[in-house]
Length: 134
Image (cartoon, rainbow, N blue to C red; front, side, top):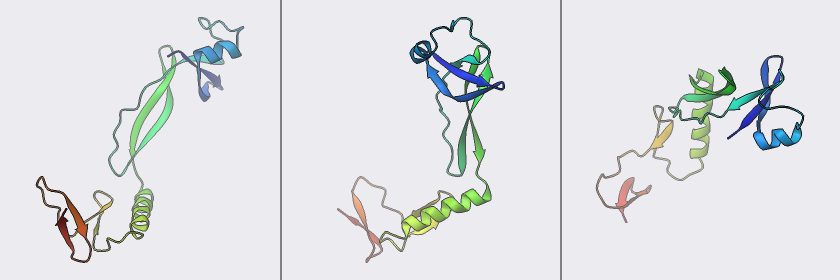
């Protein structure tokens, strides 16, 4: 995929432009000899899988032919972790499984007893506080 990006004050500005759109919008520009206010752009797919308390960050970074996507991970701040946990807890409060226990490690709720690990199907019965085979 052919992409270009506008450069303002030496930095990418807004989003990359598809090659066909760029050529239609700027027919006077030679894409093989771009002016300083445009550069070729390389789209890099994000393949990072963050853990529960990490955030994927995106920015544009220079490369040999212009600019490209750059992906990184950062750890959540204490405030972000608390906000995420509180959001999960608030949403959970609306369901009927009040016996389930919040697990900070996974930032989610777990039943008070583990689901049986066999080939059968189960549902949680809150009144019995047990897994019931379906």
